[in-house]
Amino acid sequence: MSVGLTHLVVLIRGGGEVASGVAHRLACAHFRVCMTETPHPLAVSRGVAFCEAIYDGEKEVEGVVARQVKSANEIPKVWQESEIPIIVDPEASIRDALNPYVLVDAIMAKRNLGTKITDAPLVIGLGPGFQAGRDVHMVVETNNSENLGKVILEGEAEKDTGVPIAIGGLAFERVLHSPGDGLFLTDKGIGDFIAAGEVVASVAEQPVKAEIGGVVRALLRSGIVVRKGTKLGEIDPSGDREVCYTIRPRVRAIAGGVLEAILMRFNV
Image (cartoon, rainbow, N blue to C red; front, side, top):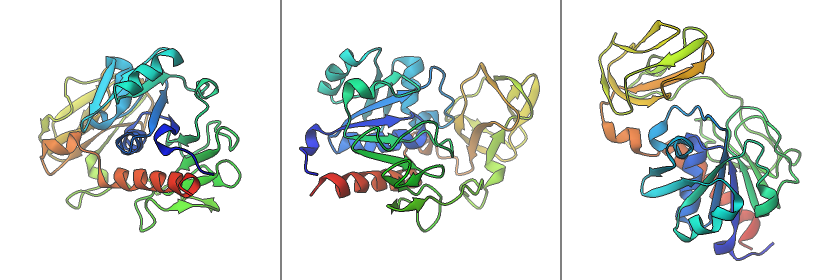
């Protein structure tokens, strides 16, 4: 199927780190990208997550701006400004107004939350939870393995390992998890420096301490109710604040896979 790629509309479900990396890559390639989100996004890598626009009205990531819109009527103007519209629409019902050529499920829920292969001429699922040829047309591998970013035309992505990406030889030690159910509170911010053993936050008045020292690379917004085991944030032992606001190589690889999938279908 051949279309004018500069006019191709891509609808992305999700506004977290991976979804934002995909949106950034496609926007830079001059696709018309629109993102959908929940009313209260729970992204931890907020320095590189366009869903922050749901709280603040707009969010810039590496020179690209996402702007919250309230209706489909506002979207063309945002595109004219070379920005990405993002709207509260968990069901992605706005696709009826946009008629996208491509729908990307980038929710990263490790299961399909309602995306169907009939939602667009090309439907792409990121990571586990989708089967190419049944739920979606293509799947892009998100596991940090040798297949990262691979376009899968038949079958499923690799199972989630649950192992965080290691930085400086540290993996599980970098990640902060909720010790219980309750209200998450913190006075720390993305880019703050933390010492090993320092209290970063609390959940239901239980302290959450950093196992290692470094820079706060990721952290939930304060004031959100969480469940036990919820990922609250990450510490980067490199101490480099720039990494907090830079798209990770893993995410760029996934975004490249999405771009490849789109070109495979339409650039013929």
